[in-house]
Length: 531
Image (cartoon, helix red, strand yellow):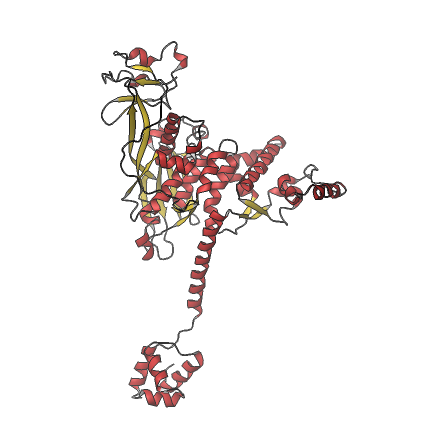
């Protein structure tokens, strides 16, 4: 049972230090209120919670169930909705965002270390170790952890907070200068992005409490960057700073006729950290002074992660990792050990290598998680050489099962008469085979694949254009021909006669309307005495 603070509160604050769940909060006007999603009613403290007994005005009372619909409330105008086309939206996809996403989904399986002051940090080398990104936890989060990194990082972040991290990255792309400009999002927008508006099994108070937690967690990561020179872009160093700045949370309340106050909405003001000046800078990217790195965020991915995170956390981690990996190269092959490290961590793979039972459990989880990816449209294409059918998951081997009943009977008869049947147990050495196996690529849903295909075509055109410009021989320019002709005192008509061309051809060539063919350039060089 949740409690609330009635309107006769004297604002003395006696209740605040006795709330074990931090549900009692103070708004901008100095009034106290209780967040229903955090209040548990303290059932272990006897007949009444301690905050109730400590209140001198008896203002803390049980919160009655809200009657009627939530009314519309006045808010500041939020930023325009993302996913305006209903399927996908550009988002910032630099390595900073990628590693931030990995931390939010996999904090418990990544190799954290402690510095001389006992503070946790995670270091990610970049550019073959020539630079590094160091991630740390914000002070308010660090203070709640134990001393050992092995146990402290068990439950730092909720996997679903990675979805908010990606939503921030999509909003930041819409800004011209995201390191200076804020974007505003509301609980209603977040509900639509994550598919929460369809969840009727969760109360409004619980939704608001969860959203508030998810919104805060990406903003509790700090990063310091030492980036080496890359091509024409000079190297740079950024001091430790928050990945995202949560500058303000606005709480919107509604009072009923009896004077009980209910939380009905939230509005958040957020700004990207200074990393965006170097990785999400349009003007600097055009001048080759900084980077402007973006990808495509499919809307279904957010709702898929929200639906599978609890039962298939490995699949959720792989799905979010592939969001960035496919941008690097959709057709790049991926080894099975790499996918397992992403989904379960290196330590779990190491334990499985030495324990048969651990190995069986890990293989079962991996094959189930691959099936979940396949169900959501990310279909793995197994390498027939390193990942043959005999060690592929059963669901993949059953892909050729006919839908027609008679054809299916014939299929199973043929399978039963073969030396090796689909339902036979896995062969000996399957684990060792998987440690060398590869997945050639993942077939992606159309709303994900089409923007990637366009991006790859654009990339290939740029590469081809650059390659052609390198191969193109240094030809004679119109200006060179004009200077050489005047230096030798030759008129256009005379040069035309000497080269067997028309005077208009010489005139257009000197005016730069076209370039001479290689054989004509050879003649011009000989006649004009050019080397």
